[in-house]
View 1 (cartoon, rainbow, N blue to C red):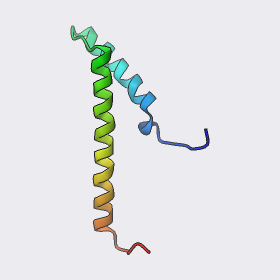
View 2 (view 1 turned 90 degrees about the vertical axis):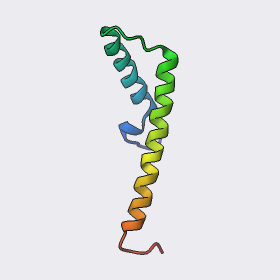
View 3 (view 1 turned 45 degrees about the horizontal axis):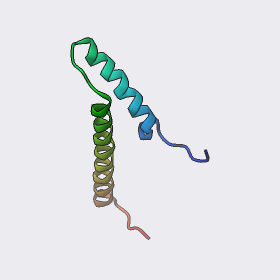
View 4 (view 1 turned 60 degrees about the vertical axis):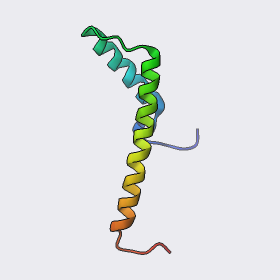
Length: 68
């Protein structure tokens, strides 16, 4: 591996977090299947991409210097 990325950009991190969350909600009587976890992971990835896009656009709009 040559690059470094934030832990929040890691699908492994989010997959593990969802697995832990599934266990926690299981303690309260809810069932979160592997398919549900995969769907949630897809939503997290899509949501992260959307937030990143919005931040990039807002950053460009409020920037004080031109791109050159």
